[in-house]
Amino acid sequence: MKILEQKEEISGFICEQLKEVQDDYCIEFLTVGIKDIILPGEIRDIMNTVLIAERKAQANVITRREEVASTRSLLNTAKLMDENKTLYKLKELECLERICMQVGNINVAGSGALLEQLRELMGRVAET
Image 1 (cartoon, one colour):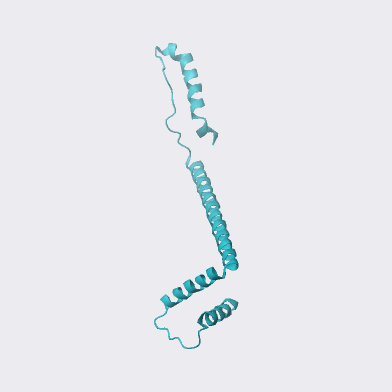
Image 2 (cartoon, helix red, strand yellow; image 1 turned 45 degrees about the vertical axis):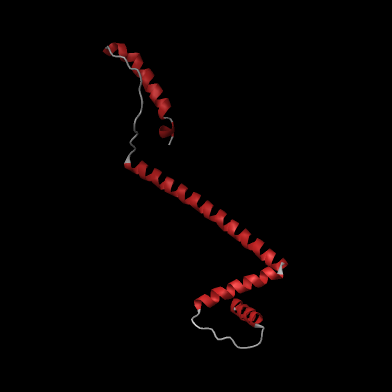
């Protein structure tokens, strides 16, 4: 609101008005200032609603910015894994480690193609 932004200007105007009549009352005004402006309840509620909306909008912008940064990081990781097969295998092993942490017992039987079997299973899960 303009009145809140112009407290100093209003103080100067009031000081000028009082200095014009100070001799009539045998007093001298050195400084005049506005300490608080108390707004009617309805206007105060409206201003609070506006402030809350502005804060939510700012938080939303920050959240979106972080989401974009996270997505960009994921894209860069995916590009690196696509270009580097060793890195891709390492990521597969990390996923396998996370799966193993969630499972109580694992019985492994079969040929040496465990990673390929897991990749096939993960591909099936991703498709559903």
